Image (cartoon, rainbow, N blue to C red):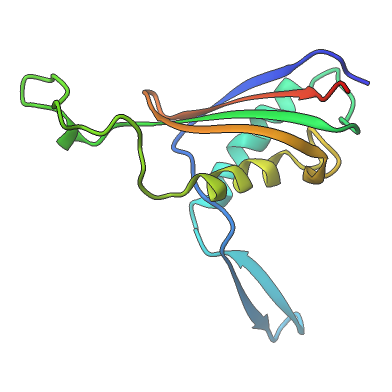
Length: 146
C-alpha cells in the first residue's frame, strides 16, 4: 500500500471525454469506437505523461482511492473591462460547457493502468471547475483509510 498522497499538475486546456462514436472498418472487419471530441486524445496524452512522471518509483495503486481534482479554466475576455478589471457581473464560477463529469472522465481514463488498476477504485472524489490561469488540472490521489 502506498500511504503517501500522489499530487501532480497537468498544464493545458482540459478537454472532455465521454461521448463515443462507433463505425465499422471494412479493412479490419470490425467496429472501432473513438472519442467524439478530437481534442480529447491529446489532452489524455498530457494527463498520462504527467501521471507517468508522478508515479516514478511507485507501484500501481490497487486499493480504494480518494481523488481530488481541480480544473482551472481561463476567464473569457468579455469578463473584463478594457482597463483589465473584472466586470462586477462576471460569474464567480465557470458554469458553462464542458461539464465537470466529462472532464473528470477524461482524467480517470488517462490514469487507468498508470496510477490505478481500474477507475472503479475511486470511491471518494472531490472535483471543481474554477477560473484560474494558466489553464490546468491539479490532481491529488490518496488511499482511502477506513
